[in-house]
Length: 303
Image 1 (tube, one colour):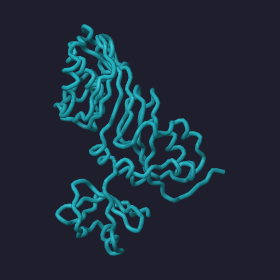
Image 2 (cartoon, helix red, strand yellow; image 1 turned 180 degrees about the horizontal axis):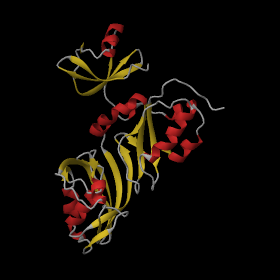
Image 3 (cartoon, one colour; image 1 turned 90 degrees about the vertical axis):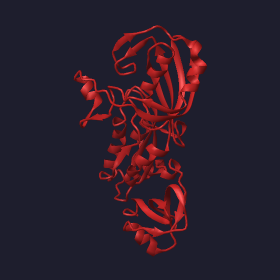
Image 4 (spheres, helix red, strand yellow; image 1 turned 180 degrees about the vertical axis):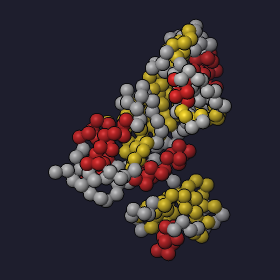
């Protein structure tokens, strides 16, 4: 008989998402296991969608760690290796779409200029086929109805960019970018600067902050897990992905203040959020401003 327990599960899972599977579909084997081990009410979500044609690292959160999504997006750049083809542009920006434009092949003499250009601030428009919302509806739904919604450009950051392979027909590049950056659009912009057009044919996410694809578990292996204990062994502490400083509360009185969302006086100062602990237990996430520790996320409810 499969083990059933009501003890809460809180933590992260590093998954190697395969191709031809949506990020939402990648949650299914884990949701099924949670139901089987008495964890049906455990919250579950992922940090950053990977398109079905793409593979690589997907971080899945359980329990109160699902509330960390905004902090992962803000503080953890995402790193990709991408392969694109020159000469054809598709309506989706990748190999799943329909070709609608033919161009000359790439003028690769501009390589050094292009490599230098794609570092630092980078402005791009969300693609027509994307999950960006317009009037509460994803752009891809509008596009499927034949309506192309042009959104204002959004400023992103490119922390690292390198062309690994380049010829007139094909490019392979790696990039570390801020959350929300569409690599499909980046490929189209790169192709334009090579006086061509293009689309992605392969995309692999290799890192999210400190988390690496090499640390990830193959999704198929989760179908083989049979118990609460086996799933627990796969959980990774959120501090691995968000290595903020740790602040230790000295007293039970301060713990109670934290539990109730009250401000705590402190001598510490920190620009980034901090993890708050007491006697080895993680209490949650806080910010420190002008000598006051203020609760951002209270993780005490299930301790």
